[in-house]
Image (cartoon, helix red, strand yellow):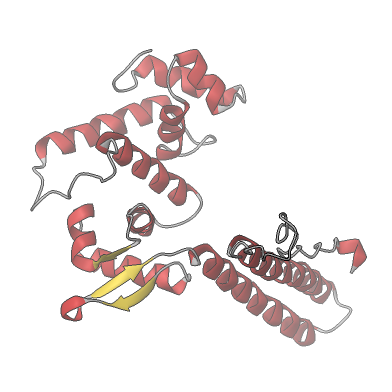
Length: 264
């Protein structure tokens, strides 16, 4: 199996495969490369619809040149624990960051979120983030402010009055609920616009349809997030001496079916 960086002919094959609608796994199989290599290459360079082989090749050369010419600043972070392969961890963190960015999260916020998520403690101080990511304190502060506004990070007091930034098992629940609240605000504004534009007018009808759609979506997101949290965080029930051996298996909350639009 080939190793090292992708060559320009390989990038051209990736571009042709994307144009033909091939899945990443199939493109990787034809190149005899890991699927993660193709996924990272495409998401880092514009995504499947904007990927260009020549542009991606030049960008990779520029990044490699910067790594060769820019010496690391300060002490390097410790090697990953639990016998992990440091190279594999760095590669996965880069892929995770790229996917977060492709989903719409700004680049620096994606880097901070990935860094926090992949620590075993789930928390770091600002100075630790600066050291690990080799960025300025201002960049970290801006990223944390954004992530906190999205419900994805919370602050905790640390030693010597240094705040710690934390991600935990509730991070995606909090984020989903924040999204639902934001969507609910759009519903309210849309319905306010119906009154301003006049009920029965084309513009008002459009706003009412928007409000109905978003209202259904926000309620569904909030309900599904709550049900998932209850199910996934439920502790196993310890059978008593009088209970059947399989007692507790059916004690988990059952998700309430989400109604389809025609049922409302």
